[in-house]
Length: 223
Image (cartoon, rainbow, N blue to C red; front, side, top):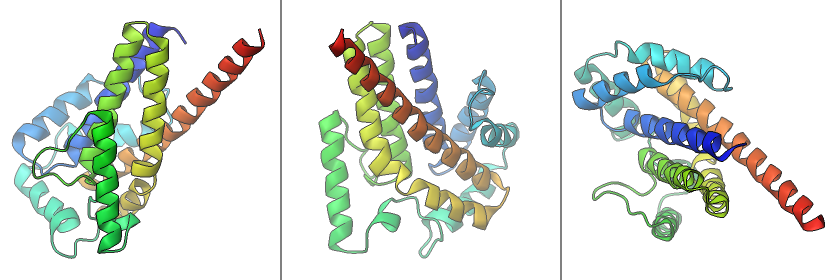
């Protein structure tokens, strides 16, 4: 893949991660407007395996429910006491208490390694925070490709894979299935279905890229 094409793909992936992160923050009019504009800006996604789920979400974003209606749904699904689909990874990966603390500490350490820190008041294991971390890594990758720094781009891809697997793929599909069971084809059901399809596709893509990179390095070593 040419560096310009790889850079464009990384920018596209960065933007999609940010769309999903925005969709999983509390709904306010400004965010809904940004999501509506973003859904109209994406083109050329039909070749990706997640396109069907994305298309259903984009259709819903053309005329989303009012912010007040979505805020009630958001609270009931994600934020209220006893909500069925919390947005924190620790609800799926750790038992309450010490294990949760270890997970949060591990995440904070990982963010620090990447040069990141959650916004004040944000939980390190919140889906939106983790999605934004992936967007940051895709941005770093894109910049490396644009500067034709292949080594830095491959390092960024390795960091993406190392973050996606244990910190998003390990729990987001389970969360997404809970949301779809609770919300059906409603707004958040579509968000969850598209987010799940996208991160699973991302896992497959990063595995493929790493495998191709390893084969290339092995072939170069034999020359």
